[in-house]
Image (cartoon, rainbow, N blue to C red; front, side, top):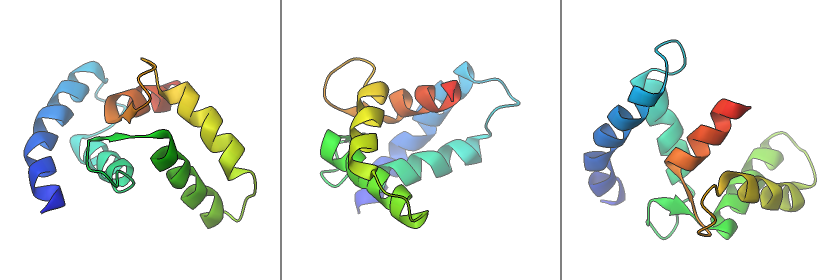
Length: 101
């Protein structure tokens, strides 16, 4: 059910984002995979990650690689990704930051 509402919006988001990306960067399928990955950490289902949700994502990434320092790095990454300073990271904000790296 959680993904049903989301899956109805996903194609529109992907199309809007794809317009801003060159064809060589990411396919629609790659965008959908990235969006699905990010949104699996969206526990309150508001289509954006709070700082706590973003840090949980960073923790999962660091634990997978058996790295320490996930909390400090998560806070840094959150601040870098929250482009408009509203306390949430949307998929569009996250994707834009990913393109910079």
